[in-house]
Image (cartoon, rainbow, N blue to C red):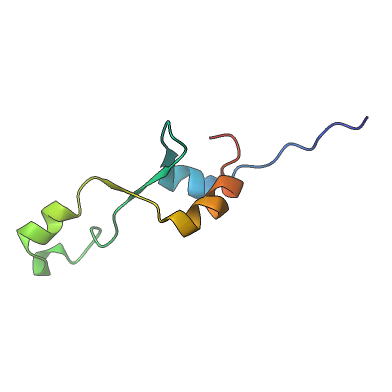
Length: 68
């Protein structure tokens, strides 16, 4: 019986997403890289931390990160 081919991890996705114990994915929030002087402190504070990836995107991410 032939060996099963190992899947390659999508390195770009590996650097951006983290899987939780329950199999959900965490992502960083957008719009916090530059032009911060025009954004309010409240808005910037709300952009800290992580958020869960939308349910529709989880299957695609699971294929990109098979061993995570």
